[in-house]
Length: 491
Ligand code: BES
Ligand code: MG
Ligand code: ZN
Image 1 (cartoon, rainbow, N blue to C red):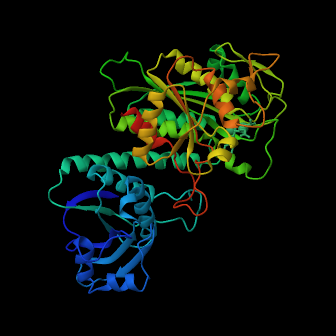
Image 2 (image 1 turned 90 degrees about the vertical axis):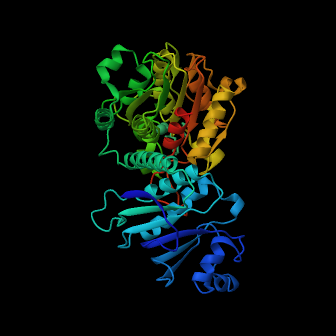
Image 3 (image 1 turned 180 degrees about the vertical axis):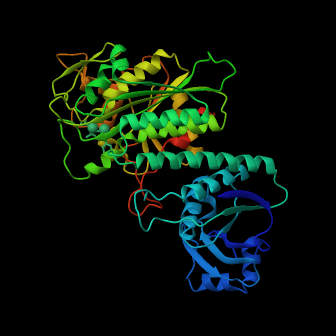
């Protein structure tokens, strides 16, 4: 798909589809609406007065062969109230519009920008919307896969704007959205196709293609390094664990403290001996969403040649019950030396992250961010809209929230008070891997905090936001986190 910026007007551009956002609260008497209304011989006013068309967010009205335009089809894209229109709405609305038309045999789509959103932000968000719309999560269908006929997307802009800036923003949006789609495609892979070793192979391919340094530890190397918490989770499965390290050297000084990104890579989470109920267990193939986000993010970081040193750490395991599986009551000595009583084998994410965070801490990073489908409790707390965010550093937390703003990904900070730590105290060992019934997302974060020391750190719990739900504008995995991580590293 060819994405181009063209200095041309909505009424003279030849294309198969022209998309024009329209606001609920705008008058038909001036500016673009007035001009458009005139070209359409008063149709806009008529549609408004009959209330067939209100420009509510996501509402799409298609007009065919408007005879005073060069476009074969015009989509009036409802954009809601003009003052709540931001880069987030641009991304989602354009995604919806492109999803609507991409299956028709129409090759050339033009998008007209008309908003108060800063042009580069708007351009980036729009191109992200377009690229995100091309993936539908139907990878294994042999028939009836969603199609994409679009060959060319034109972004129409007026003469005065600085083109290079916008061209750059378009390129950036494309890289970010393609990385998001990569994460979505990987998260969507079923566990029989995608083991920890396959994830590691893929990481190696990515590294070779994008000039990252890569190191992959197999179980013997992990044993040597005493990564016992990761190995304990993996021991029930016939699929061997992998520990994946990817490095991007972007800073002028290769020794400069890196930013460390850690992603939970459980390729399937059955719960282990603390087996999950069958209901929705299939969704636990997505328990590697954190790992996929980190892998996709570092790929984008390399493509954008961001001038920072970045290290991605991915502990990859499969959590299954068997005669060799870890048992509730087992005590493991994690790599850090801290001993953990495993009360529930389904709280496995925090075990593998414990060792990975310890590895990260040893790199003396500038800061560390981990991302994980960690707790059902986070879904209970925040639903399907915002990811849980935890941090031991207010400044860093703010940086992440601002990055999320730019990325169009929503977060909500949850607390880390010391009182919550009492929940993971146990008689036999230093800590146990679960607490009581309440505040489960926070308790999991307190557990992770044990392994980060003084390193500025953020923990992102994406258990509620890794998959699109019925009624949301797309299907399958969301790729949540990829864009925020890149925007954060780049700020
Ligand atoms: N992978 C799950 C968390 C999860 C739940 C992700 C729902 C996506 C949707 C995690 O490994 C898990 O099983 N957590 C347990 C922890 C509990 C045993 C303390 C949970 O949330 O039930
Ligand atoms: Mg689990
Ligand atoms: Zn899990």
